[in-house]
Length: 225
Length: 397
Image (tube, each protein chain N blue to C red):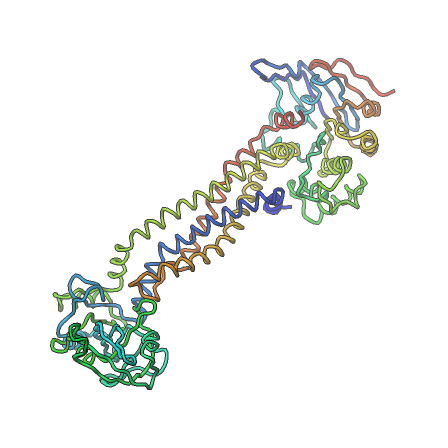
């Protein structure tokens, strides 16, 4: 489903070149739940952004569902992110002027889903993440955990092939973070492929496979016992 | 959620900032509106004034405009008969303007006297009572102010005096006349005390009887005849007179009032620039504040086009709302400014500087809308080009 080969990423910072990735390769199979772990600066988020098509590698290739990302135009890549990938960020990044339901509808509207259909699906997704009763609330009226659950519902809006999450519990307290972990486990059980960057040991522990990174390289992988 | 709905909602994030921006755009729009009304208003108002009674051609002493000087035309009755004989002329009449006096109790009040030919007049409208009949040498028409000064109403009798000798403080000629009606003299300034009699009576009161003088001759062109053709024939027939069509007079008036037009263009242009800067600045600030949010939207697959449309929608919504308030403000200030400007001495009361015209107002609104929307171009471009990964990295730190 997702194959990254020998990814390298260099970028300039304060007059020097930072080697964020030094030849990282990763494969994620359908239905897998993979946790990317490692210390800060090890290249986890950069790898996630490159396999998610929101950054480009200095060298190496990424293939998603048989499509090589480097062959796509910006428009095609945007479309692929919209329809085949789902993103969840540490800081949720919901549109504060929109309600929970409107935030979930947004990717569907962009994909051209008709109004009634996308409203119905947004409601189903909000019910799935346990926020059906909050659909009319604006993002600013939700707690951190609720905002992250809305962000997850938004990421699932267009039925992505794989869900990519960058520190999804990083802004949440332990109890709220546990709710997100439970939700991720349920998503995976229901068939969603997950690739999650995390510092959260609990999250890494529940993943089917844990990939360790250090200094821009994948140093080890371990499947759940 | 459409781009426009989302854009409009985004304006509500910072209500005070949006309100201040809207106020700024409203003021700039109001000024633009006023300047647009001013630039075309003088011409329109002057043209409407001249055509108020449908007379399209004026004949005046050479080198003068109607009532511009005390110069007059001799042999007015003969000239009018000659003009009426032209096949392209439907009606023609002479008008004499002169200073006379009216007796009010034991004193004399200064009046402006019109000598007219009631069968062909283009300078007044009856507001009360009756019009003068042709050849009615015993009747008089009064303006509202003259009626008040003389304490007279239709049916009363007033005494007009002329050829007043300043040394003797007495009148050489006096006439008692019956007030037939109250009228609005079209070219009177506000509060002007004017009276009108048939031409021979006013000529006698104003020293011009012997030479049958008039200040101007008015000509109404017959249906189907071309105004400029008739004017050309009259120029040939009366080479010693100034023959002006309404179009000629409007051109001359525009020349005299060119400062107003230039001022309106300069101030209107500045207003437009201010509106554009306001919209552009607000949107640039807004976009810079929301780069993280925009990068997220791009990350989840929202296209550059959608981002551009959303920022454009915000700019358009700001412009439309600001211009809406601006129209109300602009019409109110135009009315206020018009009242000040038209109170200047010598201007006809029915003259307006600020005339709202659907075509020019529509054009101003369109220009404002287009430029206001275009003001969002740079912020929209900025938003759509934000590097996704770098912006998200910066947001996370």
